[in-house]
Structure formats: structure tokens, C-alpha cells
Length: 228
Image (cartoon, rainbow, N blue to C red; front, side):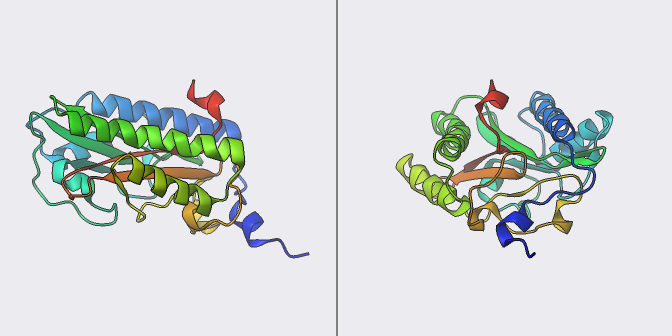
């Protein structure tokens, strides 16, 4: 009997483990916090990328399925697949984000978050709103069991109401025991069913409508108990 496209999209590999996925998530989130504490004004973006890679390796993780990214200032508006402007230096009052996808043993981690240095209220609001919007979308998923398509339509509407533009070049994706791309390569934003927990990364990239800066937050799509 043939299985539906939606069921096929949520398959896992032979090494899949809930405990393993949660371990990868925990180590990924910890690495983000560890690296963010080391980034400071005057640092060049490329050096921050190397610092992030070293932190991941020193933590026992492997650099895997997408490049390790750190974006400073003007580079925070760019889609992830677009290269940064080289040589950007973090200023005294600035915004930056991390986007990492390490592997912990057989399991994929993926996480991102935005941070500010110095004092700039618009940067601070953007970074805060990216994470807030992530949780608002997650709460709608928990409560209403919307499809992936409907979740991103909701995210787009909410982002606009907050004064930001949602970047649809970051539409969420599968995550699993490595490599998830052998199972499914489509996006969460095109998924025409309510996504299951422990299977998907919810990505939120908001940008200033004038194209000056942006902020990013992503994490595993999970219920409230995992965000205490």
C-alpha cells in the first residue's frame, strides 16, 4: 500500500532516536550561547565563523550538513545561501546572528539566534521579535495543528504587523538522524499537513523593510515543555 507524500516526508532513518535528537538540540543551543559570549565589537565576521567552528569541534560535535554561519551588521539581511559581504567588522552598537548545523553522533542539530552589542533599540527589537515570532508560530502549531503552509502564512502576517519583512528564502526544513536529505528535501513552508514534533526546524528570518538589518531564530519544532 502506497504511503502519502506527507507521511513519506516525515519518515526517519534507522538511527533515529528522540533522546539523540534532544541531545543534539541541547548541545547546539549551548554552543550558540557559548559562541555569542565570545563575539565582541572589532571582530571580523570571518574570524567569528572560525571561532564558531572551533567551539563546535571542541564540544565534540561535527561540522556537517550546511556551512557554519555568523552574520554581522549588513550581512544579517542576506539569505543564507547568499555569501556575506567579506570583511564586515562588528561595530560598537550592532546586531549579529549565528546559524549552525552540527551533528552529534548520528543525530542532526540545527539552531540559530540573534544578539546585539552596545545599544540600539531597533536592533534589540528586531532580535527580540525574531524569537518572539518563532514562539508565536510554534504556539499556533501546538493549538491549531496548522499545516506548514499555514504556519508560514501566519508568520508572514505577524511579521508585517510587527513592522518587519519575513524572508521566505528560509522556509523551514526536515531534521533527523543524519542525513535527513536522504529522506526529504522539501521545506516546512510547502508542507501540506500539520507537522509532527521532533521532525522539523522552524526558521524565522525577519528583515527591516528598508534593507538595513535583520534577525534570525530557529529551533526544533516542539511543544512548550521543551522551552521552560
